Length: 198
Image 1 (cartoon, helix red, strand yellow):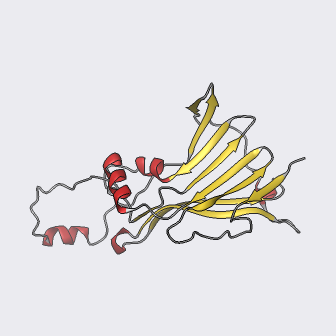
Image 2 (cartoon, one colour):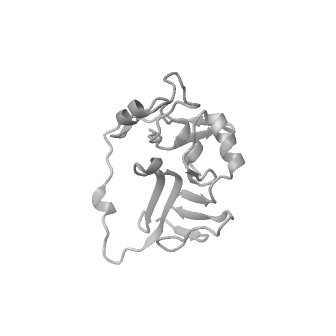
Image 3 (tube, one colour):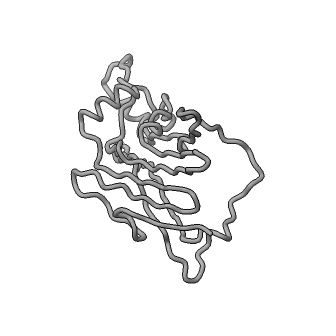
C-alpha cells in the first residue's frame, strides 16, 4: 500500500506561482517511497547572470530561473534525479545550428567587418540534450548513474485519467526562456503530473 502526501504552496492541481522578488517555500510530495521537491524563485539578478555567463562561456537566455529546480529522491534506493537550469545550459551546443530566413540577406547588407568574431559562439536557440541528472549516493558520495537500454515500457493505460482520479500534484517549473530576437520562443521547463494512484 502506498501513501501520498503533499506540503507547500503547490498542493492543488495547477499550483500557484511566486511572490515577486521572493523564493517560494518548496513544494514537497511523497508517494510510494519517492519524495518530490519543487523549488521556485525569481529570475537570476544581473550580477548572477554575468557570473553564469562567464562560467558557462555562453550568452544566456533572457530569463534564467537559476534557483528553480526539481528533485526526485528515493530514500531506500538512495537515487536522486535533479532538473536545473545550469546543467541544462552547460550542454547547449557551441556552434549555431539554425539561421533565420533573413540571415543571408542581412550578412550581405551588413557593413560589419567580415573578421568580427562573436564574444561567445553558441547555439542561439538554446537547444540542449539535457534530460536531468541521475545520481546514486554511496559512502557519502553522489555518483552519476548512466542510462541503459531496457525492454521495460511505460504503461500508458495506467496513466490515462480514471473516474474519480485526484491529482496528488501538478506543476510546471520553468528553467529558462528566450524570445530569440523575435524569431520564436525557446524555453525549457519540467512538467510534473503525479496522480494519487502512483
